[in-house]
Length: 288
Length: 259
Image (cartoon, rainbow over all chains, first blue to last red; front, side):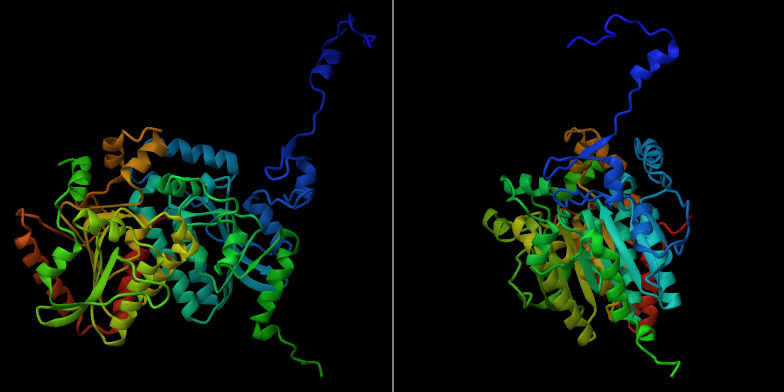
């Protein structure tokens, strides 16, 4: 059918602009089932595909909002920024663009929080900041988080997402693996609880340090978790990896994670685990 | 030598591997096999020997010499059972109050399917944690390649030393070049950027000592290493363990702690 206004020109600027700027709801396509979902709907659904349950990456502030009690998160060392210690090519630009993209100053946020009334220290890595790669600032913030938790006798609840150690900081990023592991060990030796939730993707130097050092290790459904990245393994063994290799479910099958934790019930699962470790939260019948 | 030449030297054919160091420095060496969990990893040699008469535990990454030997040793790239063997022997050393000496030489932990299935990340992570509080003195020496987490898993120590022509890096220069410039051939530039030479790392405070390689057969180097290892162990003999561990923690805590 020929539209009635086929030959009608816009009478004024406003008419013309209306046509040009017709609002199209932005959508995101699920890599698992191919279904498109409106970005706003996805946000309401905790960044989980409503059709198949695929867990999209979630930014750190959104996670804090989902997991921590309302307004309980008090960030420590916010705004701590990396400097280009080794004068590494293009690193300054990379830092600038990552800040702009993520709205964060670095690849992790750390703070004191409460989850279901249980005080804890929380760290949440940021997928939009160089895929949460670990440089000196990420290592430092996580270390301070564990040291603070040790000082105050608090459990730590952490969310990992990382491509590994940050190449641009050379050996100093490698040293963060030892540094964070040392802080986790001290916290652990004091009898304190550390629960870690592995999210997509958790690889490299983070997997080979604090991601695997939790008393309880949870993983989000479908999350890629491994030491070597799948492409590196494929190049090494010269064949394609089977489907599902290095997923959270694969790790569960091989005995490396305690449970799969879908986002919808994640807060409740964490509250239950924190309560099970909290002597002070056991029924006390003080009133009686 | 520029950084790239150091990379080549560290990997050079004919460069002594861990077994030669063990024979050159220790006496009465008895190799101890297996992780008591899964298997025995040829990429890591462990055992007990004497350093100038003192019993010490030696844990070393061995790349192998002949082709057959190299294959048996997986070219020095350990699997999880290698790191678990290392940890078992470290715990044994702790029990018998023996100092631990680690010789590091690997292009990296093996990135294979089996390694992932058996928890490569976990195995390294556990070593990092446990070494930090191992209640005996630990000295690590990089003798060739120090490839990322696979090397660090034997280098959370009281002191870390490097042979003059060894390297220590978070990523291989090839890997760095292909990520940074999408060109694996720009290895020379990448080697420079990564600051992976012994001189650079000494300057950055990542290592405490460089052992010169003055002669081709390494005889002098072994003698020097033996003398310095002995001194390092003697220096720590009367240090209370808690003080030793506090120093070890501070040694790693300092990297990147300035805001």
